[in-house]
Amino acid sequence: MKARYAILFAACLLAGKALSQSSTAKEYPVPGHGFLRMNMPLAWKVEPRGMADLATLFLHISPTKGNSFDAQITVVWLNAANLGSTTPESIKANTERTGNGVLLQAVEKTLILRELRGAQTFGTYYALTDRIPAPGEFKHITQGSFLTGELLCAFTIHSESPNPSEVKQLLRIFSEATHVKPAP
View (cartoon, rainbow, N blue to C red):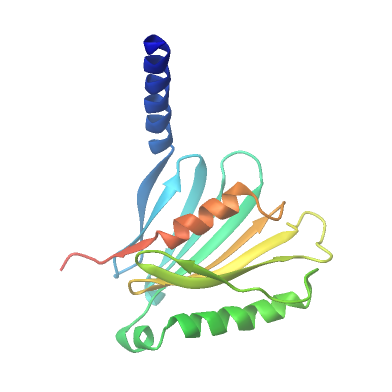
């Protein structure tokens, strides 16, 4: 009996080690303003593109195999004035305004806003279903924005099914994102 528990314990340790190696913290540079740090799965492809003139970063995230989802995130550094006026209420209002426009083409009749919150992050998002997707387009969209440090991040996730694990995982990654300021 003890041998069986020892084998089970060793298997749990190995599984935990494998899970910890399945993703890694990565830093994506925001030109002139540090990095956006996110814990990204190793099995996903992340294509960053910086825009130096705008202190902006664009990320395209997709699986390395298949096409179960497609995500884009635009990261903008906010100066002190813009940062001061960016509140949970303003993010919610902007997300609601965007969502009401998308709602016109959705199966859903009402927009349900959900909170996105982490230790250093707050934001809002919604999920809708396209009533008549064009051939080759995804049927489901999850869209919103969040603030972490001085970085305002707007995201769009397209998916084939309404609640795939990748969308939940991306929302968790976004809620845990942090702004790493540049060294002085």
